[in-house]
Length: 306
Image (cartoon, rainbow, N blue to C red; front, side, top):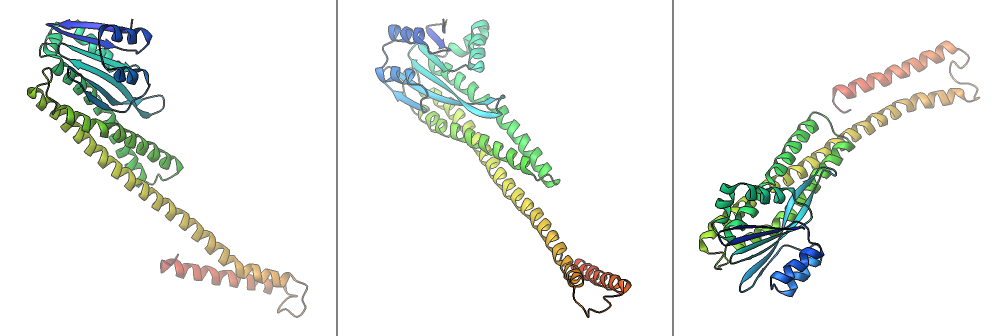
């Protein structure tokens, strides 16, 4: 069964790791939640929200998660029902951290006592705090990748693969920010709610989570600006390389034009051309013209016009 229960001093923690028909019927049988909440549970992906009722709260949180197979960031959706003497956590998809969190609390009496003796509100704080702090390695990993890519760019590695990597990092940062942004306002609202199970003493704890999210937001904002700056830099350097290549090809084409014209004239069946009957003079004229062209190129190169 996907429903697991943990009890400690009048507090019951129910963890549902899969919202199937059996889990849904369990909730409807044992709890009288609003029918709109049940519709949200069965309606697939939901936006982050907090619904306040007389005797309980219903929350939906999104947590950024790193997916190794695609090297991208996805969001894990978690639902919470919290009331006096109980906390229900609902996973919409597998969450290894949530599973480890529950079993750690179940198997370690000291952890269980510390987390559950202070009521459902404090337990929810511990869960949310752990979930968001678990995103720190994601940010640190992205930061290291951006720093390494920045060094490679200024070492001369500007190609299509670099542009692709920049696009991937930018996508991940934007996804991370898109997930985190609504959670900041939700946690901020949570710190101002006053219920028997969510009293004023817990405000400082949820404010601490909100401060952490604001810090993460600032870091990702810096990463976003860095990536945008690197993208502009790579575009400028690649355009500069392209312009240099085009410039070199243009110089070669222009330099060959006099020789092409000269050979075209002497290749026509025209009488009266100077020294047309003397091959040595014709070759000397070609060499002289080529020497003049080379001399002009050297002068332009010294004056940095090329």
